[in-house]
Length: 80
Image (cartoon, rainbow, N blue to C red):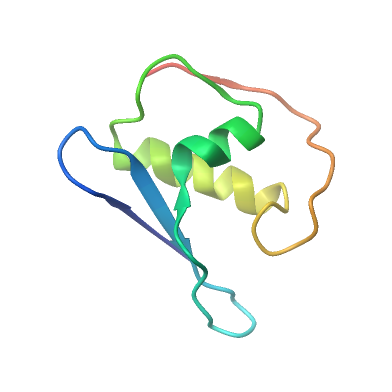
């Protein structure tokens, strides 16, 4: 489970992840940094919550959050 929030209008998005096994909350992670770790080219500032949620879902699927880091086998370009 993930909770995404912005620090204000036109600010960066941050995500808090909740471990499904323990229910513990992780520290906040910058969605822009997650996108960078996923090798996603963001053409402009991430403004929409839905875009931030999709990046977080990709980070979970890639194992950046709850598992050891694995090789990322895909690349996508997010144009906003």
